[in-house]
Amino acid sequence: MSVYPQIRDFGDTGFGVAFGDGVDRAVNARVMALHAAIGDAGLAGVIETIPSFGTLFVQYDPLQTSRADLEGAVRAMLPGLQATAHQGRLWRIPVCYDADLAPDLADVAERCKMKPDQVIARHAAGTFFIYMLGFMPGLAYMGGLDETLQLPRRSSPRVKVPQGSVAIAETMTTIYPWESPGGWHLIGRTPIRLFDAARAAPILYGAGDEVRFQPVSRQDYDTLAARVSAGSFDHAALELAR
Amino acid sequence: MSAALKVAAPGLFTTLQDRGRLGFQSLGMPVAGALDMLGLQIANALCGNPPDMAALELRYLGPSLLVEAESVRLALAGNAQADILAADGSVYPLSSWRSFTLKQGDTLRVGNTDAAVAYLAVAGGFDLPPFMGSLSTYTRAALGGFKGRALQAGDLLPLALPQAPAGGDRQVDDAAGLYGDGPIRVVLGPQQDRFTPDGIAAFLSGEYRVTQEADRMGIRLEGPAIAHTNGADIASEGIANGAVQVPGNGQPILLIADRQTTGGYTKIATVISADLPRLGGLKPGAALRFIQVGVAEAEAIRRRQQADLQALLADMRPAKPAGGLDLDALYRENLISGMVDAAQGGGA
Image 1 (cartoon, one colour):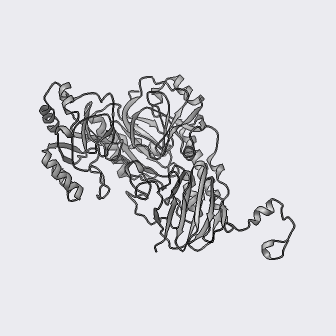
Image 2: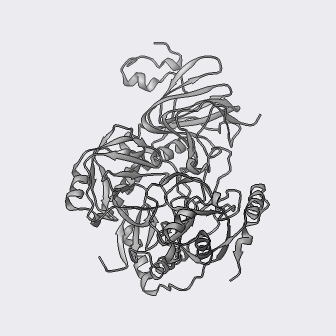
Image 3: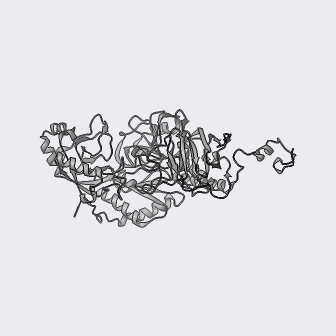
């Protein structure tokens, strides 16, 4: 089981290339490198590839290619894989950590034995790496949470998490792009829309990008929220120069 | 007046679906798309459309649609009770696996579907903008299709063509044979090593029932519990259409068209692509079993199914006008054997 990369069966429309089973930047970099390489190669019959923490899922059309042919072509790419070639975009996301938008902040602070301001400072000091998107359109699993803030998920998930909620659990942070059920700890909220069907790129960021959080006052949050609602906020301005 | 179908009654859950929203799963965007790609392709072929054009997917109970266009050609794939209430007040039954041409003021009424899913295609398709390359409706995020939702009474579905294109109606043989029967065929994996040998044996030998929790996203089954070796959690990874996910309670869930792109539960197997159309037709209470096949065998089964589909479509032939006398059937039944063809004016 410890021999990676390992090819795994996902039926007759896909297979997985597993580079590791944990959450690890070096492993994820290889996943992303193969994701990019297959995208560039234009292999016949490939529909798309879905990167995740440690596995790349390669989806294909069995009427246009076969597992045997495609697996052979993908295996041939593995030795030359350049895992460091691509640097993603860097985003700055405004977050208001006020108590009414952060229903779990006090509880998180208590369990981490610090003041809420310290939780905010440590969360806002991080640069988070997007390992993958999934679960719902635009939801990013971002690694790099300060070790002192790491807690298991809530024992009872919420039925309704408000859209834009900024949350932490285990080693990760995320932003809920939609109102949905959720089991992470809610420590703030962003007024920006991670998903907007009216935008040329409806989903703001992608796997391999990095994110920093910028604390904003409640007044700034409300102003930004109004601009976002009115459609006068330019989401491209959230991308920082490298 | 622009050409449209007016929704007089919406049916239980009628949505526009095509091949699905492909190419954006790495951003977390679910594929959606038709539950039964065979039905979608047949309905489109009967209308002279490209095979993957968006059509209405009907669940359990179909809609009633009033024609607000000079005329329109539609086709029904999947067994469903349907009739036409003509503008002049006459009513006549309508069979599946054929196209038919309706005039302004006619109403198509689709009742119960024998399977849980059927397709209604329109020649030329619907005049709606695709979202991220697809017209498939993904209702959980209110995206695609008609306003991102299932049809409601009063909706006006805009048609691409103002009238039915030239050429008459067509029919194919009943396509039930394409779907196969017997156990649902699966390829084991990707996490088969996370289940005990007894757990895998339970899955492959037991009978499972479809619970009430069955929709376009997933079908929860109830049956012999499938035991894990080391818990049900994995690091989230991509999910194939037809994946058989087994959470901690050991009861399998079939993940289908509207499945989330990634998930963190172990998957014991994947239903082969040739059997996916059958999953869409499963109703709560239905019993099913699973049988294991290899990947190469699964691919071969799919290619044979596609060849059979092409053969069925190649045998497409002109259909009698809906409501007209079906002379072929009368001859088959020996009702007018040896007599003069009534339609030729000879009299019987």
